[in-house]
Every structure is written in structure tokens, then in C-alpha cells.
Image 1 (cartoon, helix red, strand yellow):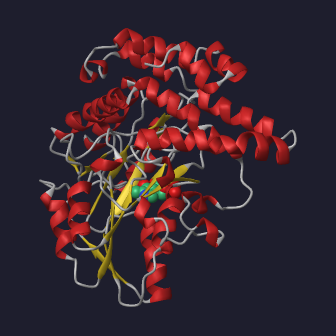
Image 2 (tube, rainbow, N blue to C red):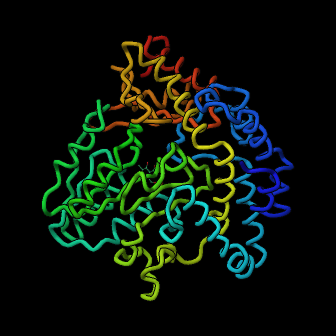
Image 3 (tube, rainbow, N blue to C red):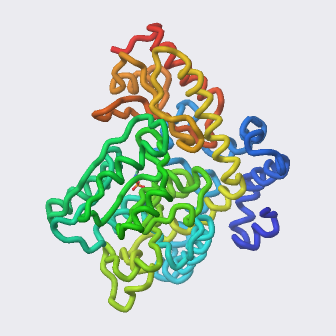
Length: 430
Ligand SMILES: Cc1ncc(COP(=O)(O)O)c(C=O)c1O
């Protein structure tokens, strides 16, 4: 357990004292001590504990933000660290940023690697998941006719990236469909494995999809791909710091994630994991000298950039660890279940997310049958100031709902009530 003293030792001096002075991490740690030993499922329903977490953010509570799948607000302590590092940098950036702050990226690498469960020498810090994944997608040597197997629910930008390789290099992209919601993990793995041919070189899929929040059976897919000599790129944009897992439970070759989503780190942060044996053969997006071929840092050669963003990841890790991933994921499922089980029991609603904890966590997708989602979502905003995400896929449509640790029960209930008002015809969607 992180104590005030160890926290001060790890973050150092005046900066850390500032974080305590405003009641930031201090209150989180005190709240954590109060529930220590209690089951995460019980803490999930302990409103006095979550009140402390809610208070750690500087939010606009006149709106109900149920789109935490895009990017998230950072807690106050993280945002203050970001601003502090920017101020320090701006004194003489060539000295304060390059000499003082930038080398500390190594502490961030070490702590992220510990949280993800890999060697720090396998983890590159990037600006987002797109950059991380594109390093893998564009850095692999592939030739015309080589095949990439993915799904038709993978992230648009990542599919666009492959489509560019189709146009540029003549590779073939195979996109499989899978049932929504699936009844079993087999429903997810079978279509991907069935699409593999002797020409398949890469299997690319989401750890958890952004459309319905579906969690994939990563380990079994990666193990099977490895057995067949196929590289695996896993899109973990939504997974890291969302629910518990470690790299060894995934077994993939390349993994890219955002840190401005579930870790609540500053906007413009992510990481790329590259299994050690794959580092030398993977080309960086922004070239590095040949002498760095085996160094994971070759993927960070992006030119001048702020050190503040990536260094403040350390503060986000401290905040996250103060809650613990077990409590966080249990709370997120508790919030998701509160609206999904209420609406899912009524005939006008169709839940597109399998609510089994093995299949999903915070993210859920719900449709009001007969109400166009593309018009419903703007109505939720106009009438209730609720931010949600319209998902319109050729095979289904629905509202994506993504709460976060700062979301209150009242906000969830307002959303559920709004959906019932629309479904019941009390509020019209034109
Ligand atoms: C599944 C998935 N992959 C990749 C990304 C891209 O993440 P970023 O915006 O951090 O580049 C997202 C963003 O929402 C996503 O949902």
C-alpha cells in the first residue's frame, strides 16, 4: 500500500506536497484505507468511497459525460502535474525540458511496464493508441499477396491504415464479421481462425471493441496464431487500466493502448508493447539510426515534443494504483449494470453488449428499437445534456454508454430515465 511517506519519496518534494495540500491523492488514499480488506464487489456499491473519487476531478457537472470512450478528463493531481511540468519546461526548454524532465521518461516506462507486466525494454511511450498500433501495422515487412485478418468492428483508423497498405503494397485485408452480442468466446475466435490461410501473416483484433465493449479471447487467439507462425497485433486502446490483466495473459506480439482513456493520463499519451524478439525486425514510423535497431526507444524518435504529457503519466499511475484495478473495474461494471439491467428488462430496448464480466466491463451499447440512434443521441444532449456516442454499424446500431469512476448514480439514473421517456413516447425524437 502506498503511504504518504513512500508517495513523497517516489514523486519527490514540493510537487508532491502540492498534490496533498489540495486534498487530491491524500483523500483517495484515506478512502482506500477505510475500505481495505473489503471485497471489490462490496466497495463498488459504497457511495461514500466513490464520492471521494468523484471529488478528485474538476468537472462540469451541468453535463453528464457518458462518452469516456473517446478520451477522459484527468483527475486534478494529474492535470496539475501536467501544468507544472509545462511551466518548468518553459523556463529554458533546452535545459529544463530536455535535460531535467525528459530523462525521467525512464521512470514512466518502468512503472508502466510494471503495471502491464512486461520488461521496460519492451515498452515504448507513444502519443496515443493510433500511433502505437500504426508503428506495428506500418513497420512490419509485408509483401504483395500477404494477408491480414481482422474484423469489421475494428477501429476505423486502424482499418484505414491497413487499407493504405492494400493500396500501397498490394497486401490483402480480410475483415470478418462476428455476432453481436456473441453467446460465447467461441463466437469471436471461430470467424477469425476460419479466415486464416497459408498466406496470412498478421492477425489484428481489439482486446475490447469500442463499438459494443466486447472483450476478445486474446490469449487463445494469440497462442493459436503463434502456433501457425502468424504475428498478432492487439488493439488495447480501451483495455489498459480498465480491467485487470497482464501481458503474459495476452501472449501477443504487439499491443497498442491509449493512456488518455482509462488510465486518465493527459491527452496525448499511449504506449506500444513489442515482444522482445520482434523489436529488431519492426521498422519505426519515424526513422532511427541503425545502431538503435534493438532498442525499444527507436519507436520514440518523434522529434521535439512536450515532456510534460508523458511525465504526468506517473501521476496518473499513482492515482490509478490508489483506487486499485479490482475496485475500479468492479465499480465500472456496477455502473454499467445499473442502466443496462434496468433497460434490458424492457421490450423496447435491445442491449448489444454481453453483460457477462468475461465479455465486457464499463462499455455498453443499447438501442431503442424503432428510434434512429443518429437522431436519439443529439436529443439526449439537447434535452438532458447527456453526452453519449451513436454507433451505426452496417449490422446493428445503438447508443454507446461509457461511464467512468467519477460518474454518479444520479447521472446513470438520469440517462436510464431519459431512455425510458423516449421509448415510452413521452419525449419525441424527430
Ligand atoms: C478500439 C480503438 N482503437 C484505437 C483507437 C485510437 O486511440 P487514440 O485516439 O488514442 O489514438 C481508439 C480510440 O477511440 C479505439 O477505440
